[in-house]
Length: 161
Image 1 (cartoon, rainbow, N blue to C red):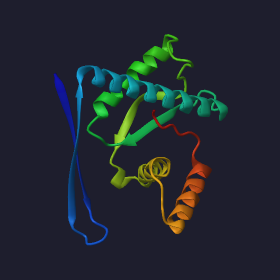
Image 2 (image 1 turned 180 degrees about the vertical axis):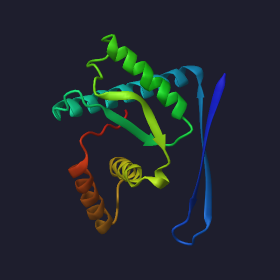
Image 3 (image 1 turned 120 degrees about the vertical axis):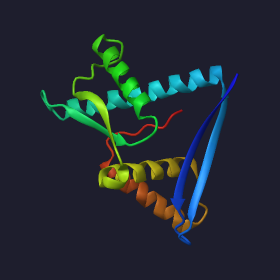
Image 4 (image 1 turned 30 degrees about the horizontal axis):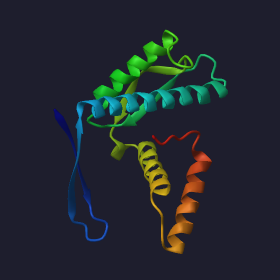
């Protein structure tokens, strides 16, 4: 059996102000789906463990960190994965316990949060820098400067695979 995952998005064109609607699809078989799900679990586990290490180095004592994310249609799955990873951490199945993370991931609309928008922008530029090559010298110079600025405020990043 093949599975088709569809994602849709709409934006306003910066050049002429028109609405742009896009749809993407990923068609995979069942074993590819399992590999993707395992990959997401690994990414989530790595990210949460790195967050925990950062919080531990910050000497928070018994303080807890609230995990916030951009509202997305996968929020329920993300909450389930987060809960599962916390349970695995409590039973010693992850490399470190997740002692500084609160009980769940809280999702909010990024259009009402400058911080979530900043994370979106940083992620966009990190991916762009790592996965595309600018041909124009001025664009190349700008991308290097943007990456340097993002790196100044970034504690951890991970691109999979």
